[in-house]
Length: 195
Image (cartoon, rainbow, N blue to C red; front, side, top):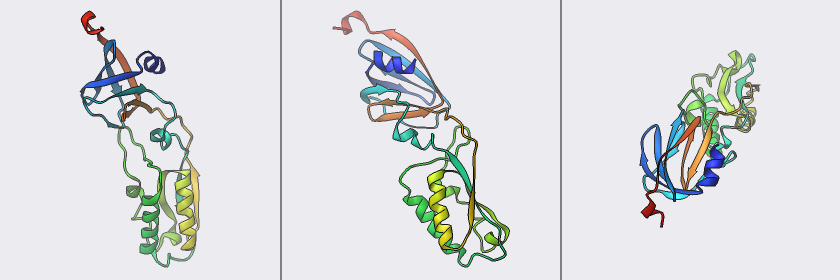
């Protein structure tokens, strides 16, 4: 349905924006696009451009990768330099090229807030503990390599694969990522405006 809409109306202008819907003016009609479960967006009134619902896009990349939990293996010794390890992990997270999210319904948090600082303590390896939760596999692998330099053995627990419920609507350079989109036609253009 959404792909057909983009084929029938390849371009449009955002006329009105609210927190749960927008109005899109195409060459022939005015449409109301309701969205539920909005994750993030960048919408500006007056934007004109091509309309599309791409199933694959860099903005959706972080939503469709397998997630894992990274933990430290319990041993008999303490971490030699926990603050330096924390800084190295945080630096890697900030340098990682892709945005990624830890999802709770309708919210997101940045990667550097996912570091469980209270777990990366001198006794981390003695007691074991969570280093990162719900992170993409490549991120967990990069952090595991850093931990290995500090002699912290790690292991990961993959999370159940699930298909992402999120979809992307692009209008020019503006976008919205949400769980569901509902499109209704408000009115056709008046006859005199079609010429």
